Image 1 (spheres, rainbow, N blue to C red):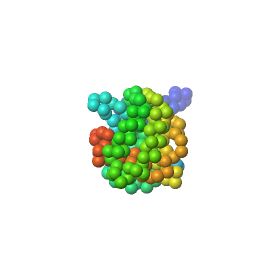
Image 2 (cartoon, rainbow, N blue to C red):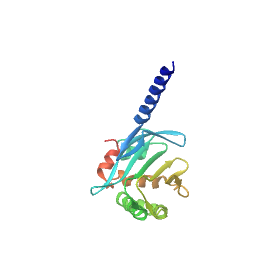
Image 3 (tube, helix red, strand yellow):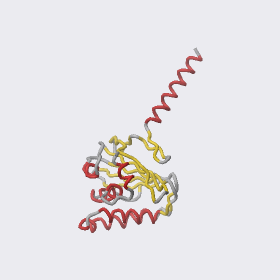
Image 4 (cartoon, one colour):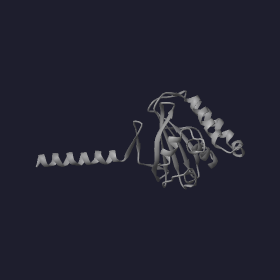
Length: 193
């Protein structure tokens, strides 16, 4: 009887481990969950990939949406909360990262929309410059929460007040999904291609 319980317990633990492993995706050595909860809404991993700069891995990224989207336009139009999760794969100066994000927004936003984004971009640059450095394994998240705005969380800590304008979140998403993305292979990976 004791052996039977031990075997049953072992099978149960193996099954639980297998289910837990099946619920993650390995992206550059970083485990991303297949699903996430945001504002009591279930999000599904739309796609994930690694951002390369030359031959170096910079970070792993995962895009979570309420439903699958295969084009940037579908991502923007998807209702409900959204999340971009970034986990560093190498050390990076946070001020430099903030500048790269600002350049990414500039490269992918129509000129007529840029003037509305400048206050948010300045604030975002300040948020990242306060971090000094991000190290391998450290994470930050950019989330759109309807009725609240864009929330940036770095190392598990929410950074200031939300950015209220939906245009700001969409501009941030165009860094990776716009016509001049940071990394074309990452764009395809985030769109599940």
